[in-house]
Image (spheres, rainbow, N blue to C red):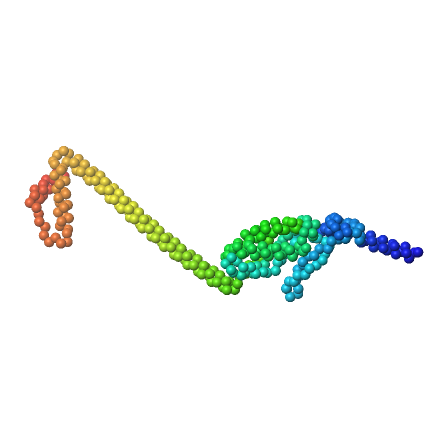
Length: 322
């Protein structure tokens, strides 16, 4: 009798333990009752009726890296659904562009399960379904672009791909947050052509920059020569102006001095005699002196009119010595 009680106690404990499910934070468990959806267990301590209630198993594609660095995938059955944002690294695939160039692309997909019930009942294997949908959508998008457009439109492809996937996976209870294309690798011959094109483009830009530099240098040199010529002409102009002003000033000073001399001579005559004749005679004598000092002058001719002027010199002398 005691053995039977112990057996019942053990079975009761096992039955009770079978009905206790502890769910971790950010995880849920789908529970079915007699094969039909019953409820979703949230994080914390939960109780179910053993045998009648059973957690629904979910097929999940999982990636794993081996020791040699290669990645392989396998299907894993699990009863808990992770609600955190998940990242899925899609294997590299070949895609044909609009201009029939075959390129290799791999992508990263960030998604999050928003409705666990839909993720379980609306699709058989959620990660694999998302992967296949991403691959086919990516082929369609790249097939509408040329190779050059594909290489420079990575952000555009990411946005369009995320929008299409988010709309398509909405019925699966999944939110696609973002898609990132990691590598876009064209064929080897196209890579070689692109490298040659890039080298030619760099050489062209270098030649343009060199020509622009020579042009700028020539312009600066011409502007410098122009500025120098202007400054030189301005200097000569100022020098001529100053010289002319100096000569005019000298002539004014000389005229003032001559004026003062004439005034003094006139005052010396005291209204006696003829000062104008005196001045004419003095100018005449200065002119004769200048003529006599010439190096090539061998003879000096005395004009007839000079005798009258010279005859008055003695009178002038007598007047000044009074």
